[in-house]
Picture 1 (tube, rainbow, N blue to C red):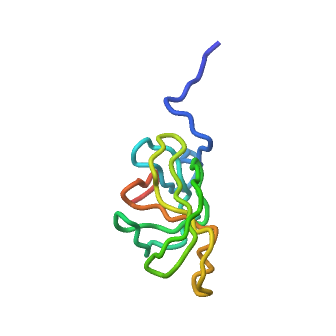
Picture 2: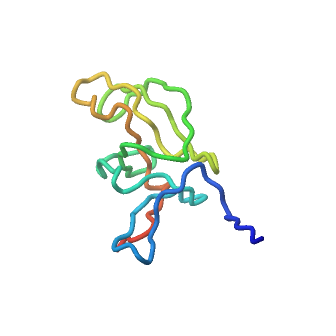
Length: 126
């Protein structure tokens, strides 16, 4: 009997490149421990600013835990946000928009900001 092990165990693994597949799934991972975080298909915008520089807005993420929501005044106004962290290494990666006060910002509700300082691109990037 052959026992297969992986060096790291995450809650979710995102699809990766296979030799017989004509394209690769582009994904984002935690820069600190390489846990998968999001598929490129879930990316909404690259035009966001985090507390440590540029950030991306995603529709959904995996392998994260979420803290309690709190009100913060951000560049676009008052929002209720919850910091989220990598479930594997516990590094805070960004925040989730729980509620937006202004109607023009409602599209962000339920979405996730990941700061570029905490993620890397995987698979199939030119």
